[in-house]
Length: 109
Image (spheres, rainbow, N blue to C red):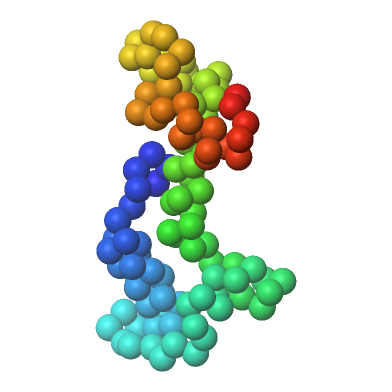
């Protein structure tokens, strides 16, 4: 989940399974009635929800975290290995410098 973007269809299917676990009342073949909207259940407990993780947002956040570690040369073995073996110069792969400046809000690290 943190290195690959999960397709929306897969996330929707996982959410169907999660909804079924919550609303089926233990009957594996039974259909439960949804008493609360799924978005409301994904809210934090302070906001009145059940704090269920939104998988689409979670996947996006983990992908950004993965890219942050890579582009900022984190001291993690896979990052160091990738940069030393595949990218000998300081050139950032697959992106131009002006794109990174735009994404970082005008700052270039």
